Image (cartoon, rainbow, N blue to C red; front, side, top):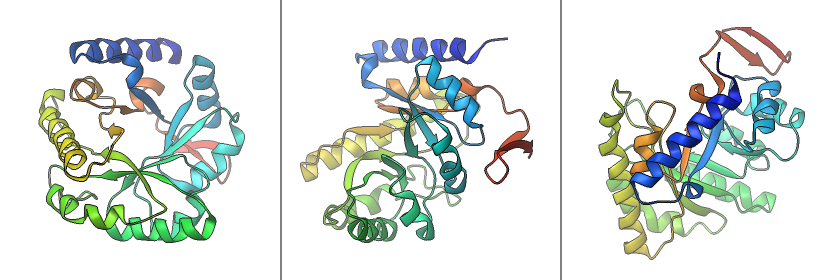
Length: 241
């Protein structure tokens, strides 16, 4: 059975091959290891393999897990950030992938001022227009970008998207292309340097890299298939889902 190190090596090779096909250097793509539901021991194993960047989407779990992991680990928040969780979350994470509305951005900006922080964020874009997902519709983001840029504490680093589930990774390509083109439009229109495109997960990250991803969020392809157990911060144990 492949070890985490084996899976990590395979992912790096896949990223390097995809980067080469798109004329990019593999070092321009960062791997966010999606560690949600996995115990601190799994994060420590990933650190030993050379991974330093981890993604969590449940604040309670992250608050319990982060102190149990060596300090060289870096943390991104990759889920929907609820208003009542902003104050607790801001000091813990170096980048927030899922800022999905002007209202949320304003709340983050206000609380960041109170805390003396300058949070780095990505704007989540609902490229496919799915009613079940959070995120700016592309036209709405273009319409509201000036308001977002007026928020003095926020550092807008780029865009993020999650395409609809698809059996074939190629089906995600048009959504990744659309996000890259939106990034290019905003950069040109606003003279705004957007460093990151966070797109691509375990099933479709190679296609995402070909279309310009700078951050890929990898969970099962790295940590293995879900075991049916979840790490519970209240007990520090792996319990059945």
